[in-house]
Length: 315
Image 1 (tube, rainbow, N blue to C red):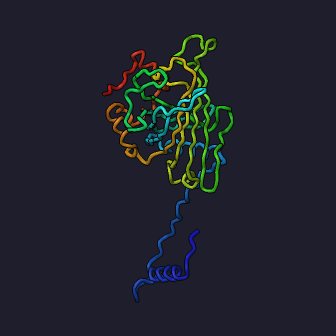
Image 2: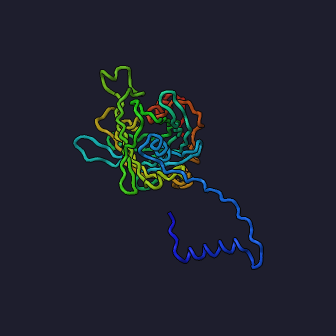
C-alpha cells in the first residue's frame, strides 16, 4: 500500500479538478470509464509443491524453456593419505552451461528437465596456467593431464519426488536469506574396473556435496524468471585415473565455490580462452531434446582411452 502526504493529495485533487473542468468556460468533458488494474502476480509459495518446483527451477536455470544460464566455480584439489600431510595438487576451475525444458510424467506430474554440459580444468597453483603435464609427487612420473569435459549432464525434477511424496522445501530460511545443502553419496560399479569389483574392490566410491544460497525476496519474486545463487561444490573421491596412482591408498578432495553468472561473458579469461581453443561447444548447452546418456569424469576417460573421443592437442 502507498501512503500519500497532504501535499501529494492536494496535487492529486487539483489535477483531477483541472481534468474535469478544463479551461475556464469550457464544457466539462465526459469521464472515461475506469479500467481495473491487472492483479499483481503472487510470490512463490514455498509451502506448496508448485512453489518449491518453481523455486528450484529458478535456482538451477530459468522458468522459460531454452534460456541458457551459466554457473562458475573455482577452488583447490588436495590429496589425503594415511600418515602424511595433505598436499595441494592443483587448482580447479569449473563451469556448467545449462537450460531447462518443461516436462510431464504420468505418475510424477509436471516437472522440468535440466540439460547441460560442464567443464573442469586444472591449473597450476603458482602460475594459474592450464596444466598440460603434471608430475606425480609419489611416483615422480610425468603424466598428461585430462581435464573434465562432461557432455551431457542432465537430470529431471517433478512435483512428486522419487519417494512418491509431493516435493517440499528442504532448505533453510533466515530473514531474507535462504540456503540449501545437497549431499550425494556415490558407490557404484566403476566403468574402468573389472568384472569382479564386489570380490576384489575397485568400486567407484565418492561423495559430492553442493551448497546453494541466495535471498528469499529474489527467489520468490514472481517477476523474476531466474534467481541469483551462489554455489559451493565439494567432492571426495578415488584418485583421478589420469594421475596413474596404481591402486595406492588415499583419496582426492576438491573444495570450491562460485555463483550463477549474469551471463556467459562473465567467465574468467582463462576459462573463455580454454573454451575457444579446445571446447567450442561449451558456449551453449546441448539441445533441449538431448537423449544421450550422462557423461562422468570416469566415462569420459574411458571414451578417450577407447578412441570414441579425442583429447585437445596442447603444447
